[in-house]
Image (cartoon, rainbow, N blue to C red):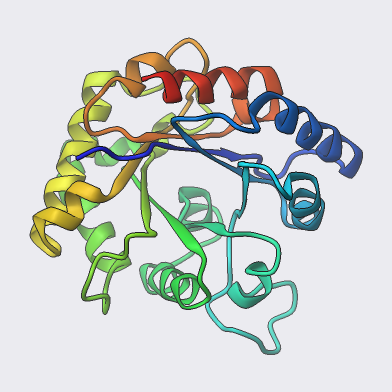
Length: 250
């Protein structure tokens, strides 16, 4: 089944406002109209409105890096899915930095996924093992997928899975293309068992973790890898454009 790959640029906690606006402008020049890949830009929350304005009318889409599971309420500092829906169309859910640095629980990840879908956002559900879990990666991925989709009977077409081994995020220690392919294929098999083969075959699965211009082609040509979730390299317009074009070409 042909799947349109999706490349996400996760800026994390980087850029001042002027830097963000300049980067958005450069990305618009470089990537607007790119065929063969869907491009999602995920700036820090304060710049989401700037991103929505800068990318309006282009083929580039805006994503948020996190979301709260409640639609509104007394949750100081939190941002709800209905709020995000006015400036973004995507949201990253369950990123390992939210899980392990901020203590996000499996129940919270599931609640965020459900809230995002209810608000019409397309979630990127991040899963992946830590260094000490490499020997039982199948169990870790199975648990994260089971918990993430708890209470969801059908695999939503809007959900993208990002396989990001935690030990590879921001470390320069990227997974080999063969290992990344094997993990993404395993995730697809698990989705087929949890839901059905047709929806699993249609689901897009990204690789993330120290993705750079020098390794993206090897990931992009793997049959079960449908794009990438890019961290540091997404802060360089030329590098990120190269990554997106490589994915589109593959």
